[in-house]
Amino acid sequence: MNLIHAPGYSIRVVTPPSSETAPRSEIEIAGAPTGKFVQGAVLEAALKWNNYLLLFLTDDIPFEEGLNIYLLDGNLDVVDSAQMYHIYSTGVFSDLDLTQADTARFRFFAEVVWTLQLFPQKVFALPILSDPIGVHRPFGFFRMFKIYRRSVPDLGKDETAVAATVSLGDG
Image 1 (cartoon, rainbow, N blue to C red):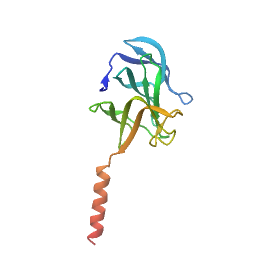
Image 2: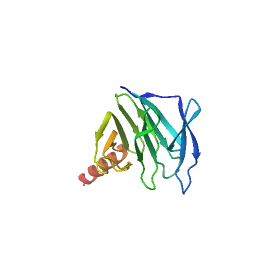
Image 3: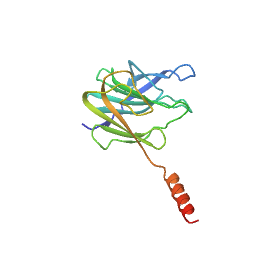
Image 4: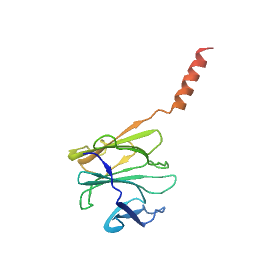
């Protein structure tokens, strides 16, 4: 089944970000509180998939932005989750692409396209070794989604390297 936008979902920040604490927010449906809380301060996307809700939230911390990803069941309980961050680096959530079934593509860190593939049932995964650098997950042997990363070459750097090679070869 395809992922679709879920416009009725929002969040209300209950603990703003600070140097000592991560932001925490309550999930709301049509403006009504649910009593369910997640880490994050800005709801970047809420998507429905089968009987699940997939949330993407950023922390709203300049110069050290993190992305929190939650897969929630029908009771809004966390079924699987991941955080994406690098110390002293920031990310901007953009270019969300839902054209493939059970898959969301997006950008977060510069020059990286991330692919999140959802599974209809839990699949085995080796803790720590199963995720790309920058993806952090709670310890567990089973996952409901997998995250892949693909670096996008910077054309400016490639053109500079080619120009340097040509000018060195002309000597």
